Length: 298
Image (cartoon, rainbow, N blue to C red):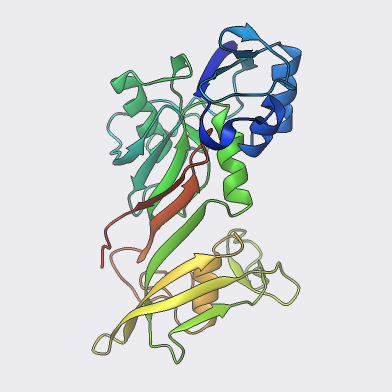
């Protein structure tokens, strides 16, 4: 099914004196969608059709109209029984606080107990609109099932590649907190060992390990607190790369497995003690720098 989306932008500040093409590139709209806008003659300024060479002026209203086939992602069956905690919402995306143990998205048509099922139900129940159409849940990035915290979810197909690029190029930056075993000699440091697929259990495809032939991986850490009685530390973590299970593998290899991480040697606990607590990004279309942060759980 083809849907017609209309995004309206008020031109102000840094956007003025750019051509439409320059503006669309600076806000990370994908080359594919820029091409479709040209082909469909979907660019208008103050109600008049223009080319991508048109120079924008302060006070202009830029309207982008695109007809797109439905994305291969979703739609996810709505399930109002799945809890959803919305941290922020605008026309283009939601930021939600995923619970520990909550799965991100379904892997089969019969599965409907995931975060994306709950978000789709939330959007339908609230009657949310996005670019002139009923909002749909689009996954931008993932957290492991055991990890809790901030997750971006798009509401329309135009914003998905914009946010995807920010995640891929580390323009959007995530910060985590973890409760881990033991104490650190250095309170600030970096883990830099490469990560590859586990060779000890090849049947467990999702298991990762330190591997000289693996992919480069960088994790920065800062110790926030020590609990000498429990022999635990609270650490703040940020990623330069996005390898699968990177935080869990690096911490385990350093002798500090995350509490509750039964895959990578963590001591037993009621949950995986890893939380995505902070997200900074540039707001789609305006490029305004925003920071979102959860209260610390521990």
